[in-house]
Amino acid sequence: MATTITEGVKVSVETIYQPEYSNPMNDHFMFAYRVNIENMGNYAVRLVSRHWYIFDSNGAKREVEGEGVVGLQPVIEPGSSHEYVSGCNLKTDMGSMKGEYQMERLLDNSVFNVQIPEFYLIAPYRLN
Image 1 (tube, one colour):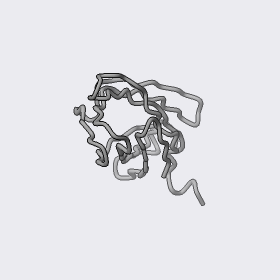
Image 2 (spheres, helix red, strand yellow; image 1 turned 30 degrees about the horizontal axis):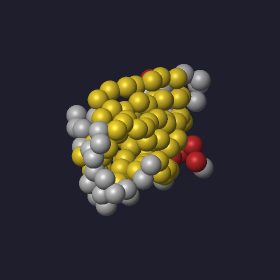
Image 3 (cartoon, helix red, strand yellow; image 1 turned 135 degrees about the vertical axis):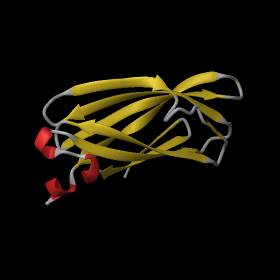
């Protein structure tokens, strides 16, 4: 599990290879990732947007930006967390992702970026 803390917001990511949705013969590898965002600060925050950097082990790079996560812009109260699951397809059986969330502190509407730690997407058979 990969974890970072930025301005009192803790982001932890866990990955799961999805063999049932993958087709290695056609260079299609599907991974799910579970993200837990915990507000360790004193003020409520809202997740406004995301910006991902996705890397395949063949050197391909992609960027994905958008509002919220899985259709939501969750408000996370102090001491609470928000968890979601999403997915990413690669053309190789190994890669990585990292990024940032843009957050808004509801107390004063200030905006800040929270780092998403780099995490690895690796088909389990590559670990042997």
